[in-house]
Length: 80
Image 1 (cartoon, rainbow, N blue to C red):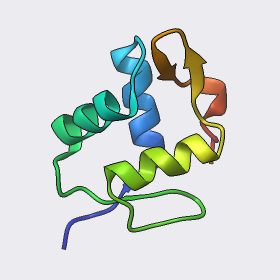
Image 2 (image 1 turned 45 degrees about the vertical axis):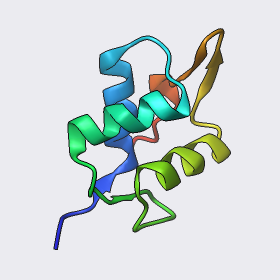
Image 3 (image 1 turned 180 degrees about the vertical axis):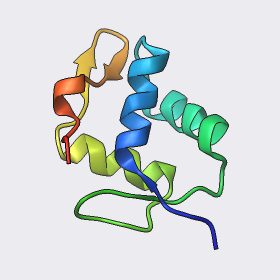
Image 4 (image 1 turned 30 degrees about the vertical axis):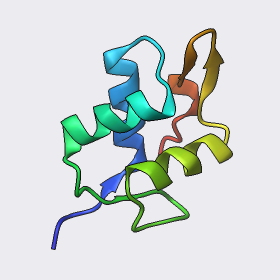
């Protein structure tokens, strides 16, 4: 069974890559970095695919709206 990846890793990747994302471009970046079969967890949810993780992070206010999509900020990544 594949190990689950914490959602923080995706947020760190977004900061590392820079620029803005759409839900689709972020999903592609996640698949490129972690693989299409990757599963993700957060402090309060688990067993999410890339699409579910994106929706979860959006609902939790982890994304910052930008002119051409969204990104995140380091301050929105919990530090535990």
